[in-house]
Amino acid sequence: MNDLRGKVNVLNIRKRDLISRKEEELRHRKVVREEVKHWFNAIEKVNTEMEKIETKFHNVSYFLRGRLGKFVCRMIEKVEEIHQKGSFPDGPIIQSYFVIFLVFTFALL
Image (cartoon, rainbow, N blue to C red; front, side, top):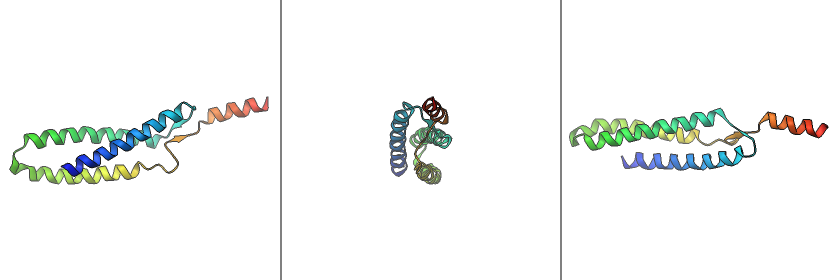
């Protein structure tokens, strides 16, 4: 359970870093990639599931935690997969073509 909590915390740290980078780039009229939005939604789902798991873990008897342990192992794999998908080599932002068009248009005038 502690391993899962640690991996979810690392995932949330990466999310906060990307959010701050995204907000900075949005000020320059750039557009967020759709895959980044999907990745943020996946993290929100993981956080919701993590809260449910922690609630169940505290409410379940000691003998039934083995069954919950299998679910936790699957959840760890899911978190690791989402974490790997969170490295965006091209960055989380794309240049807005509308802004490029406006700059080019004014340059021609």
